[in-house]
Length: 446
Image (cartoon, rainbow, N blue to C red; front, side, top):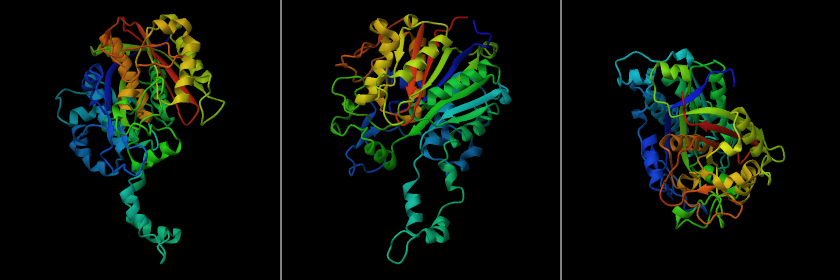
């Protein structure tokens, strides 16, 4: 046994196209709702792909103290998503942080030492506000209306607020969350695309286990619902351009005939907490984090390794760290992007590590329901896996019917399945990058 503090999950906070908050998200997942539809926040008609996963409307004011609302002027969409997730995670965990107290939601004192509360949050490429940027660019032209660097320096930049850049720095998600909740323990930002959340949760797990913090807000958030992100993914040829009229069938993880992913937005932030601290405040405990592993695809930064060696390595490290075996895992929570090559590589990794046991595992993926949330994807998947273990239920995985012949995992296609799951494994990996990560989650037992 490891001579370290045990680390448990005490709060789940998600923002997804099918629901904000763990209860709304879980109910929608159970009932097979799909959050992918034609994009409404901007006109997508000039793009080959015109669909995505957009969040339901929400008000930032519902998640921050009144005294902090002026700071909204320097918040990009990704930051507001992170703040919504953090609020839901903290309230779900029953933590009385600075935010909760200042909002007047309790008259009791804090139940966690702010110097022992940390934050590790994954972030992606934050899209600039195109209208704001276009206004500045239009004033930086020569007489022939061509762009001029000279005029940009003397006139164009003058049309941007001096704090403009602060909207778009990846570390600002963690920055605002830590300020709002007064989280003064170790804080970090992970920018490793779809692997970000798992790496952030893994780092938080390590920090708490070695005694560097008592609790941590961790996971990731990102919005890919903007013209620049859509264009970027289109140039990478990652998007399904065939199902604009049938968006609910567009993302088909691990299925035969899959033809691309779908952009989305959302995030998942969770509260990891030292077991002794959680027990002392009589917190609800969802599950225990018992293993973490990471790897790197040394063969390419832009293409998956067909054998999935890096992901398999991360899985084996997580299993070893958890002092468990592949045969003792009952739930697989793969990423499943719907991309032909990436799904094939991921299946190779799962089959390599689990072999014939793959046929016996339940499986859960959310991509067919909500699309690719980038840095937020892993946080959402982690929350779904934890909830599945806690509720002893495996929800349906949308669009995983007609599976690839190499897919041996047991996805649920129709009604949710009751299952007494003791351990699960969830993974994430970067589509553009080399990072892979895996986390073992265990049913909590004192």
